[in-house]
Length: 203
Image (cartoon, rainbow, N blue to C red; front, side):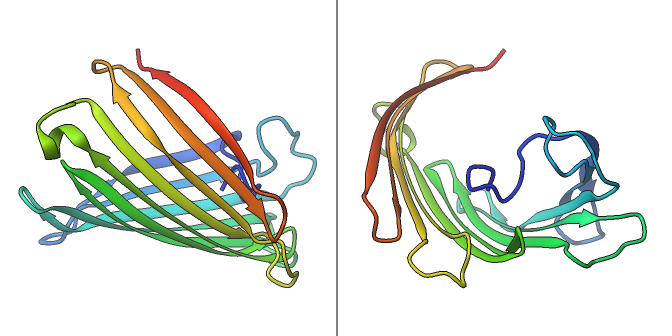
């Protein structure tokens, strides 16, 4: 969502994150934020803010069968102190995911408005852990993802399709490497493809 300009991944504001337990029901994880709304690099020139919330819970969990996670979120941009909704952009989405020691799969759907234009998008991804499934290459995994995003549903031939696929290797607990191919095509335009070598280090 940050890559397509729907939401900023970093901003100044206040946030709360936690878990709520309701008797006899699965725990519900929540996150709520009130942010500047224009990103951390932009000053707050108006009194309008961005308010967002997210909820997710395990709708099914089994030590052998894995778990199914259902989540949803809502983001409201441009709200002022008088709660005037005129010109406010709104985005909402739902996600369904399955996690197991063998891997994971997820589907995400987003809809709403950005810059006063109707947006629509989906993202589908899978991860497969070789070590858990095959008993060899214990730290090797394979992943693939397909994104389909339309920044303006009223305009033709501007749908953005992206694919991501590659291999990951966990070298110890805090060091991970990846090689992957990423492709992008907008409408009927040219297909671009980039090969990546990546690493992440946790301290």
